[in-house]
Length: 352
Image (cartoon, rainbow, N blue to C red; front, side, top):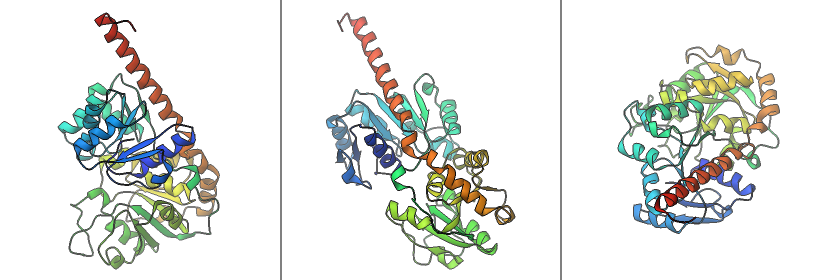
């Protein structure tokens, strides 16, 4: 597994693969959560170190996670082994712009692809013709079974939690700067939820300036180590999934936090996230909000019944139940690489 930082998607997949008996090495710039659980962890600090680390790594397949996208081309410089490109964030979709050179190169260098949702797969295939004909799978960022809450406390239907990225301006103002990272600008949601009578809790993925969001009336804590972050969600009745801005990437993706809430027995509230909304409706495990000006769909929902359904169904979305998709993808890219090698050898007249 190659990554800029040991993000939680890397960790989740690696733990699930190890549970199936696979040897996993993580090549990363930052020490990942649970780093002592993996067969080997190699650190890099610049492109040349990354290339050397990939060249020296064991394993039959090099599984590269974005962002940034240049990691894929660098990994290709370090190995002739099959490369799987795991696309957490498709920049051309996020920016609604033509793909930059690094994204184009990543798709060209890879032998197979992993997407977080079916709409993201479709967007990638429409943008990158080289995607067609190469193996690809869709694997949302499920939570590992070991991190599921064995039991959950009583949760108030008057409480709402959000965990993840939050953007702010340098000067702490009541309305934070939406231009920094629009997908993480959640001040309007916090204000409207509090006005609707919800106790709002926020667990940011990165440290915030003093009083940020708290001055809107929210309880703010964190960032926390991943298992503690999951545990901190349990007392809340609802978990917010979505963005205040209408962002094509958020509409298409299947956010990590959806499955993190479900793993802890928290009922999702989805806003401006079409793929997640479709999933919640299909399984009857949450509420889809149409407007931040009207929280009545949440207020009028039978929270107790929804929570019971979440607790009944959630284990089917453990990462271990779906990691077979990655195993089959590895087998496919290895088979294709071997076939291509044999064709080249035949053309050269080399016995194989």
